[in-house]
Length: 379
Image (cartoon, rainbow, N blue to C red; front, top):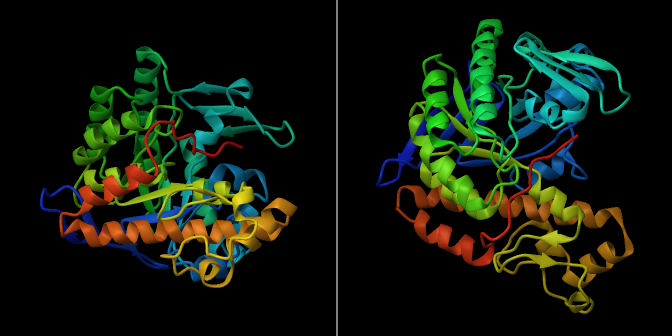
Protein backbone atom coordinates (compact mmCIF):
# COMPACT_ATOMS: atom_id res chain seq x y z
CA UNK A 1 0.00 0.00 0.00
CA UNK A 2 1.46 3.34 -1.05
CA UNK A 3 0.73 6.09 1.50
CA UNK A 4 -2.09 8.34 0.36
CA UNK A 5 -4.29 11.12 1.66
CA UNK A 6 -7.98 10.67 2.39
CA UNK A 7 -9.59 14.12 2.55
CA UNK A 8 -12.42 14.16 5.07
CA UNK A 9 -13.30 17.86 5.31
CA UNK A 10 -12.57 21.09 3.46
CA UNK A 11 -12.84 24.74 4.43
CA UNK A 12 -15.63 26.95 3.07
CA UNK A 13 -13.21 28.44 0.51
CA UNK A 14 -12.08 24.98 -0.58
CA UNK A 15 -8.37 25.50 0.14
CA UNK A 16 -7.78 24.11 3.63
CA UNK A 17 -8.54 20.47 4.26
CA UNK A 18 -8.44 17.87 7.02
CA UNK A 19 -8.12 14.14 6.63
CA UNK A 20 -5.94 11.05 7.06
CA UNK A 21 -2.56 10.20 5.61
CA UNK A 22 -2.83 6.41 5.34
CA UNK A 23 0.50 4.50 5.47
CA UNK A 24 1.69 0.92 6.04
CA UNK A 25 2.60 1.91 9.61
CA UNK A 26 -0.69 3.55 10.52
CA UNK A 27 -2.78 6.60 9.72
CA UNK A 28 -1.87 10.19 10.55
CA UNK A 29 -4.52 12.82 11.15
CA UNK A 30 -3.91 15.88 8.99
CA UNK A 31 -3.00 18.68 9.28
CA UNK A 32 -0.09 17.13 11.17
CA UNK A 33 3.18 18.20 12.77
CA UNK A 34 6.25 15.95 12.53
CA UNK A 35 9.04 16.31 15.12
CA UNK A 36 12.53 16.04 13.65
CA UNK A 37 14.54 12.91 14.49
CA UNK A 38 17.57 13.69 12.33
CA UNK A 39 19.74 10.73 13.40
CA UNK A 40 16.83 8.36 14.12
CA UNK A 41 16.32 10.16 17.43
CA UNK A 42 14.28 13.18 18.47
CA UNK A 43 16.83 14.87 20.70
CA UNK A 44 16.32 14.10 24.41
CA UNK A 45 12.88 12.47 23.90
CA UNK A 46 12.19 8.72 23.72
CA UNK A 47 9.74 7.10 21.26
CA UNK A 48 7.48 6.23 24.19
CA UNK A 49 7.45 9.86 25.33
CA UNK A 50 6.65 10.99 21.79
CA UNK A 51 3.63 8.70 21.76
CA UNK A 52 2.60 10.03 25.17
CA UNK A 53 2.41 13.61 23.83
CA UNK A 54 0.42 12.63 20.76
CA UNK A 55 3.00 12.31 17.96
CA UNK A 56 1.85 10.16 15.04
CA UNK A 57 4.68 10.58 12.48
CA UNK A 58 8.40 11.49 12.54
CA UNK A 59 10.98 12.89 10.14
CA UNK A 60 14.49 11.45 9.86
CA UNK A 61 17.32 12.63 7.63
CA UNK A 62 18.79 10.40 4.94
CA UNK A 63 21.97 12.47 4.57
CA UNK A 64 22.96 12.09 8.21
CA UNK A 65 21.93 8.43 8.44
CA UNK A 66 23.84 7.58 5.26
CA UNK A 67 27.04 8.85 6.92
CA UNK A 68 26.39 7.20 10.27
CA UNK A 69 25.53 4.45 10.88
CA UNK A 70 25.05 3.91 7.12
CA UNK A 71 21.86 3.03 5.29
CA UNK A 72 23.01 -0.51 4.50
CA UNK A 73 23.44 -1.24 8.20
CA UNK A 74 19.96 0.13 8.97
CA UNK A 75 18.54 -2.12 6.24
CA UNK A 76 20.44 -5.12 7.66
CA UNK A 77 18.94 -4.44 11.09
CA UNK A 78 15.37 -4.41 9.82
CA UNK A 79 14.90 -0.87 8.56
CA UNK A 80 14.44 2.44 10.29
CA UNK A 81 11.30 1.53 12.23
CA UNK A 82 12.91 -1.49 13.88
CA UNK A 83 16.26 0.26 14.28
CA UNK A 84 14.87 3.18 16.29
CA UNK A 85 11.94 1.45 17.95
CA UNK A 86 9.27 3.68 16.39
CA UNK A 87 6.10 1.90 15.24
CA UNK A 88 4.43 4.82 13.47
CA UNK A 89 5.00 6.33 10.03
CA UNK A 90 8.34 7.93 9.12
CA UNK A 91 9.29 10.44 6.44
CA UNK A 92 12.91 10.79 5.31
CA UNK A 93 14.30 13.96 3.76
CA UNK A 94 16.73 13.20 0.93
CA UNK A 95 19.41 15.39 2.49
CA UNK A 96 19.43 18.02 -0.24
CA UNK A 97 19.10 20.87 2.24
CA UNK A 98 21.95 19.58 4.38
CA UNK A 99 24.26 19.00 1.41
CA UNK A 100 23.62 22.46 0.02
CA UNK A 101 24.34 24.03 3.39
CA UNK A 102 27.88 22.65 3.00
CA UNK A 103 28.73 25.27 0.38
CA UNK A 104 32.45 25.32 1.18
CA UNK A 105 32.92 21.55 0.83
CA UNK A 106 30.70 20.48 -2.07
CA UNK A 107 30.54 20.69 -5.87
CA UNK A 108 27.26 20.57 -7.78
CA UNK A 109 26.78 19.25 -11.31
CA UNK A 110 23.73 18.06 -13.22
CA UNK A 111 24.67 14.52 -12.17
CA UNK A 112 24.52 15.26 -8.45
CA UNK A 113 26.64 16.62 -5.62
CA UNK A 114 30.19 15.73 -4.64
CA UNK A 115 30.84 16.67 -1.02
CA UNK A 116 33.03 16.05 1.96
CA UNK A 117 31.52 14.62 5.11
CA UNK A 118 31.11 17.17 7.88
CA UNK A 119 32.13 14.35 10.27
CA UNK A 120 35.51 13.18 8.96
CA UNK A 121 36.10 14.92 5.64
CA UNK A 122 35.63 11.76 3.58
CA UNK A 123 34.44 12.18 -0.02
CA UNK A 124 30.90 11.22 -1.06
CA UNK A 125 28.59 11.56 -4.04
CA UNK A 126 24.83 12.08 -3.85
CA UNK A 127 22.78 11.97 -7.01
CA UNK A 128 19.13 11.16 -7.69
CA UNK A 129 19.68 7.39 -7.82
CA UNK A 130 21.81 7.44 -4.69
CA UNK A 131 19.22 9.51 -2.80
CA UNK A 132 16.49 7.02 -3.67
CA UNK A 133 18.66 3.97 -2.90
CA UNK A 134 19.57 5.33 0.55
CA UNK A 135 15.96 6.04 1.43
CA UNK A 136 14.81 2.66 0.18
CA UNK A 137 17.44 1.07 2.42
CA UNK A 138 16.06 3.06 5.36
CA UNK A 139 12.52 1.92 4.61
CA UNK A 140 10.59 5.10 5.46
CA UNK A 141 6.93 5.37 4.51
CA UNK A 142 7.43 8.68 2.66
CA UNK A 143 10.65 9.56 0.83
CA UNK A 144 11.75 12.72 -0.96
CA UNK A 145 13.40 13.48 -4.28
CA UNK A 146 16.83 15.12 -4.36
CA UNK A 147 16.49 18.84 -4.97
CA UNK A 148 18.69 21.94 -5.02
CA UNK A 149 17.84 24.45 -2.30
CA UNK A 150 19.18 27.93 -3.16
CA UNK A 151 19.88 30.38 -0.32
CA UNK A 152 17.53 33.25 0.42
CA UNK A 153 18.43 36.28 -1.68
CA UNK A 154 20.01 34.25 -4.49
CA UNK A 155 19.95 36.04 -7.87
CA UNK A 156 17.32 35.16 -10.44
CA UNK A 157 19.74 33.16 -12.59
CA UNK A 158 20.67 30.96 -9.61
CA UNK A 159 16.99 30.40 -8.77
CA UNK A 160 16.34 29.43 -12.39
CA UNK A 161 19.28 27.03 -12.36
CA UNK A 162 18.10 25.44 -9.09
CA UNK A 163 14.57 24.95 -10.46
CA UNK A 164 15.85 23.40 -13.70
CA UNK A 165 18.19 21.07 -11.83
CA UNK A 166 15.54 20.15 -9.25
CA UNK A 167 13.06 19.24 -12.01
CA UNK A 168 15.74 17.21 -13.81
CA UNK A 169 16.67 15.36 -10.63
CA UNK A 170 13.00 14.80 -9.74
CA UNK A 171 12.46 13.06 -13.06
CA UNK A 172 15.49 10.83 -12.48
CA UNK A 173 14.33 10.04 -8.93
CA UNK A 174 10.94 9.08 -10.33
CA UNK A 175 12.63 6.68 -12.75
CA UNK A 176 14.81 5.18 -9.99
CA UNK A 177 11.95 4.69 -7.53
CA UNK A 178 10.77 1.07 -7.34
CA UNK A 179 7.09 0.29 -6.99
CA UNK A 180 6.30 -0.72 -3.44
CA UNK A 181 5.04 0.72 -0.18
CA UNK A 182 7.04 3.96 -0.16
CA UNK A 183 5.45 7.20 -1.36
CA UNK A 184 7.79 9.47 -3.33
CA UNK A 185 7.24 13.22 -3.05
CA UNK A 186 8.42 15.90 -5.48
CA UNK A 187 9.77 19.19 -4.07
CA UNK A 188 8.88 22.62 -5.46
CA UNK A 189 11.72 25.14 -5.50
CA UNK A 190 11.95 28.71 -6.81
CA UNK A 191 12.88 30.89 -3.87
CA UNK A 192 10.63 33.92 -3.52
CA UNK A 193 10.04 34.14 -7.29
CA UNK A 194 6.36 33.26 -7.60
CA UNK A 195 6.54 32.66 -11.36
CA UNK A 196 9.32 30.13 -10.88
CA UNK A 197 7.39 28.49 -8.07
CA UNK A 198 4.37 28.12 -10.31
CA UNK A 199 6.48 26.76 -13.17
CA UNK A 200 8.18 24.21 -10.92
CA UNK A 201 4.84 23.12 -9.43
CA UNK A 202 3.41 22.59 -12.91
CA UNK A 203 6.40 20.55 -14.09
CA UNK A 204 6.37 18.30 -11.03
CA UNK A 205 2.59 17.85 -11.06
CA UNK A 206 2.90 16.44 -14.56
CA UNK A 207 5.22 13.68 -13.29
CA UNK A 208 2.55 12.10 -11.09
CA UNK A 209 4.30 11.97 -7.72
CA UNK A 210 2.55 10.40 -4.72
CA UNK A 211 2.73 13.75 -2.92
CA UNK A 212 4.33 17.18 -3.15
CA UNK A 213 6.41 19.39 -0.91
CA UNK A 214 7.28 23.06 -0.87
CA UNK A 215 11.00 23.40 -0.12
CA UNK A 216 13.43 26.28 0.06
CA UNK A 217 11.48 28.35 2.59
CA UNK A 218 12.39 29.17 6.20
CA UNK A 219 15.95 29.83 5.05
CA UNK A 220 16.24 33.34 6.50
CA UNK A 221 13.42 35.23 4.80
CA UNK A 222 10.77 37.23 6.65
CA UNK A 223 7.74 35.25 7.75
CA UNK A 224 5.36 37.32 5.66
CA UNK A 225 7.34 36.28 2.58
CA UNK A 226 7.01 32.62 3.59
CA UNK A 227 3.25 33.09 3.71
CA UNK A 228 3.21 34.72 0.28
CA UNK A 229 5.20 31.89 -1.32
CA UNK A 230 3.11 29.17 0.33
CA UNK A 231 -0.26 30.75 -0.40
CA UNK A 232 0.72 31.12 -4.06
CA UNK A 233 2.22 27.64 -4.48
CA UNK A 234 0.03 25.25 -2.46
CA UNK A 235 -3.19 25.69 -4.49
CA UNK A 236 -1.20 24.91 -7.66
CA UNK A 237 -0.38 21.40 -6.47
CA UNK A 238 -2.72 18.44 -7.15
CA UNK A 239 -5.66 18.62 -4.77
CA UNK A 240 -5.89 14.87 -4.21
CA UNK A 241 -2.24 14.40 -3.17
CA UNK A 242 -0.61 15.15 0.21
CA UNK A 243 1.11 18.54 0.50
CA UNK A 244 4.07 19.00 2.80
CA UNK A 245 5.74 22.28 3.84
CA UNK A 246 9.35 21.54 4.70
CA UNK A 247 11.14 23.02 7.71
CA UNK A 248 8.39 25.40 8.82
CA UNK A 249 6.98 25.15 12.31
CA UNK A 250 6.34 28.53 13.90
CA UNK A 251 2.69 28.66 15.01
CA UNK A 252 1.43 31.42 12.72
CA UNK A 253 3.20 30.07 9.66
CA UNK A 254 1.69 26.62 10.17
CA UNK A 255 -1.86 27.92 10.52
CA UNK A 256 -1.47 30.27 7.53
CA UNK A 257 -0.13 27.36 5.48
CA UNK A 258 -3.00 25.11 6.57
CA UNK A 259 -5.40 27.79 5.35
CA UNK A 260 -3.62 27.65 1.98
CA UNK A 261 -4.01 23.88 1.73
CA UNK A 262 -0.89 22.37 3.37
CA UNK A 263 -1.31 19.02 5.13
CA UNK A 264 1.81 18.54 7.25
CA UNK A 265 5.00 20.13 8.53
CA UNK A 266 8.32 19.34 10.17
CA UNK A 267 10.48 21.58 12.33
CA UNK A 268 13.16 21.53 15.04
CA UNK A 269 11.63 24.50 16.91
CA UNK A 270 9.85 22.64 19.74
CA UNK A 271 12.88 20.55 20.71
CA UNK A 272 15.60 23.09 19.97
CA UNK A 273 13.80 25.75 21.99
CA UNK A 274 12.99 23.25 24.73
CA UNK A 275 16.66 22.41 25.17
CA UNK A 276 17.37 26.13 25.41
CA UNK A 277 14.77 26.85 28.07
CA UNK A 278 11.95 28.29 25.97
CA UNK A 279 8.42 26.90 26.22
CA UNK A 280 5.51 27.51 23.84
CA UNK A 281 2.31 28.22 25.76
CA UNK A 282 -1.21 29.43 25.07
CA UNK A 283 -0.21 32.84 26.46
CA UNK A 284 2.97 33.15 24.40
CA UNK A 285 6.60 32.10 24.91
CA UNK A 286 7.89 31.44 28.43
CA UNK A 287 11.63 31.63 29.13
CA UNK A 288 11.85 29.29 32.05
CA UNK A 289 15.31 30.34 33.26
CA UNK A 290 13.96 33.75 34.31
CA UNK A 291 14.12 34.68 37.99
CA UNK A 292 10.36 35.29 37.98
CA UNK A 293 9.83 31.51 38.05
CA UNK A 294 11.95 30.74 41.14
CA UNK A 295 8.89 30.34 43.41
CA UNK A 296 6.22 29.88 40.73
CA UNK A 297 4.18 26.78 41.57
CA UNK A 298 1.99 27.03 38.45
CA UNK A 299 2.35 24.65 35.51
CA UNK A 300 3.91 25.93 32.31
CA UNK A 301 0.45 26.29 30.78
CA UNK A 302 -2.76 25.95 32.78
CA UNK A 303 -4.67 25.03 29.61
CA UNK A 304 -2.27 22.22 28.64
CA UNK A 305 -2.95 18.59 29.58
CA UNK A 306 0.51 17.24 28.72
CA UNK A 307 2.34 15.05 31.30
CA UNK A 308 4.72 17.93 32.12
CA UNK A 309 1.97 20.42 32.90
CA UNK A 310 0.05 17.82 34.91
CA UNK A 311 2.97 17.06 37.18
CA UNK A 312 5.70 19.75 37.32
CA UNK A 313 5.79 23.39 38.41
CA UNK A 314 7.54 26.26 36.70
CA UNK A 315 9.74 26.51 39.78
CA UNK A 316 10.96 22.94 39.36
CA UNK A 317 11.51 23.34 35.61
CA UNK A 318 13.39 26.58 36.25
CA UNK A 319 15.58 24.80 38.80
CA UNK A 320 16.39 22.03 36.29
CA UNK A 321 17.19 24.46 33.46
CA UNK A 322 19.18 26.82 35.69
CA UNK A 323 21.19 23.87 37.04
CA UNK A 324 21.94 22.48 33.59
CA UNK A 325 20.08 19.24 34.22
CA UNK A 326 19.39 17.22 31.06
CA UNK A 327 15.87 16.50 32.32
CA UNK A 328 14.97 20.13 31.66
CA UNK A 329 15.45 19.67 27.92
CA UNK A 330 13.42 16.47 27.92
CA UNK A 331 10.45 17.92 29.82
CA UNK A 332 10.36 21.23 27.95
CA UNK A 333 10.67 19.41 24.62
CA UNK A 334 7.79 17.10 25.54
CA UNK A 335 5.61 20.05 26.46
CA UNK A 336 6.52 21.97 23.30
CA UNK A 337 5.80 18.99 21.06
CA UNK A 338 2.40 18.59 22.73
CA UNK A 339 1.73 22.32 22.17
CA UNK A 340 2.36 21.84 18.44
CA UNK A 341 0.20 18.70 18.34
CA UNK A 342 -2.62 20.57 20.07
CA UNK A 343 -2.25 23.48 17.65
CA UNK A 344 -2.65 21.36 14.52
CA UNK A 345 -5.48 19.56 16.30
CA UNK A 346 -7.27 22.88 16.77
CA UNK A 347 -6.63 23.64 13.10
CA UNK A 348 -8.19 20.32 12.07
CA UNK A 349 -11.32 21.25 13.98
CA UNK A 350 -11.37 24.77 12.52
CA UNK A 351 -11.16 23.67 8.87
CA UNK A 352 -14.79 22.81 8.22
CA UNK A 353 -16.05 25.54 10.55
CA UNK A 354 -14.18 28.34 8.77
CA UNK A 355 -12.36 29.20 11.98
CA UNK A 356 -8.78 29.26 10.71
CA UNK A 357 -8.79 33.06 10.48
CA UNK A 358 -9.48 33.37 14.20
CA UNK A 359 -6.85 30.76 15.01
CA UNK A 360 -4.29 32.62 12.89
CA UNK A 361 -5.10 35.85 14.71
CA UNK A 362 -4.64 34.01 18.03
CA UNK A 363 -1.21 32.77 16.91
CA UNK A 364 -0.03 36.14 15.57
CA UNK A 365 -0.99 37.90 18.80
CA UNK A 366 1.16 35.50 20.84
CA UNK A 367 3.91 34.74 18.33
CA UNK A 368 4.24 37.84 16.12
CA UNK A 369 5.80 38.06 12.68
CA UNK A 370 8.79 40.33 13.23
CA UNK A 371 11.71 37.92 13.15
CA UNK A 372 12.73 35.52 10.36
CA UNK A 373 12.07 31.84 11.03
CA UNK A 374 15.57 30.28 11.05
CA UNK A 375 14.24 26.85 11.93
CA UNK A 376 15.90 24.61 9.36
CA UNK A 377 18.45 22.31 10.91
CA UNK A 378 21.99 22.20 9.55
CA UNK A 379 24.56 19.45 10.00
